Length: 380
Ligand SMILES: Cc1cc2nc3c(=O)[nH]c(=O)nc-3n(C[C@H](O)[C@H](O)[C@H](O)COP(=O)(O)OP(=O)(O)OC[C@H]3O[C@@H](n4cnc5c(N)ncnc54)[C@H](O)[C@@H]3O)c2cc1C
Image 1 (spheres, rainbow, N blue to C red):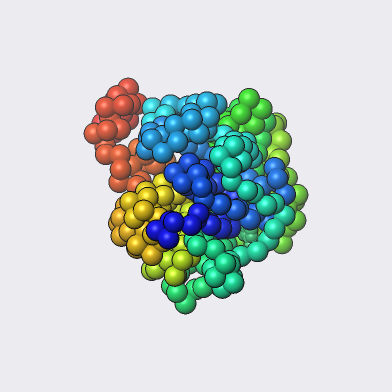
Image 2: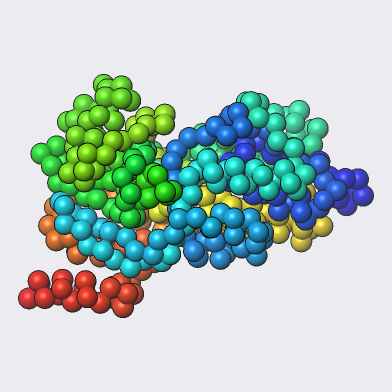
């Protein structure tokens, strides 16, 4: 922009990070050309529902109030059930909104097209040196397995830690309130994160430690066999409802961070740059916050790419690092569960809500007085 010529921006990846950046950047500089390359066909993605907390929505709303209103119009919850061996403890939590991932992306894509962003689907092409020469600014928003990050690894210096638990992300028609379900079994601890995200469907993410994974023999099963075994293991909770698979293989989470965020006119955002963990339900918001910080940094530098990208890392990194520290505490708590014995459902609820260090016993007691009083009585 400093040269006076309309700016040309290439974005690789039409996930929440790439789409939200494109919407707010195009609105900030309408003369810019913004082109997104996305490897999937339009309307095709992975996964089921994603949670979006009210506090996340509030933080993002100033950047694009109409977009955030559209994303928070659907399913809302402000209570959850923490369940241990079939005994559920209902607890009050901050309000959250849930959307099917495909509908969240469809909404963002519609806003991006309305703003004048060009989206090229069926285009699998991580960023190359020639892209960097051809475009003023290049954004790598190609997700957790980013080929852009890997291609330029000697500049971004990524660290990738593999989680020790195994997860499979299913859907089910049973309408679950947001729930954490822990089941002690002869195979070890079985966990589920479930939550209704539309009138018809709930998430049902199964999480188990390595030993349980091995004892149940999941490694040698097909996706269908795993799904059927999970239906049997959780039949009491599912009440006969089926699990649905949508390319739901077992996976271990990748905890990613990069020492450097930019390389010349290329910058990474979203999961390509750094991840949190599905258990804290914040990856989408984390990715979209990157988009906001990046646009603000570029805007404050009058869209001078070199200055703006430095500013992005300077301002955003300390905030993102603190959030990743909280996510690490959550991961450690989940990964420690298989080797522990928890017998009291309220103690489990308490630990769950305090696991990142962001909710204190006092906060929990204030919001859930009756639950805590019952627990304190049991301890006497
Ligand atoms: C089991 C599970 C549950 C989750 N639950 C939640 C939740 O409740 N709440 C929440 O906020 N987050 C949740 N997340 C995390 C959330 O999905 C991610 O953090 C978020 O999608 C990151 O956005 P992104 O745009 O950075 O990456 P992505 O959403 O992964 O988007 C990247 C895009 O880049 C495209 N792409 C990749 N490579 C190429 C290429 N070479 N060329 C072109 N395009 C390419 C991909 O097709 C994709 O569309 C969950 C994740 C998992 C695995």
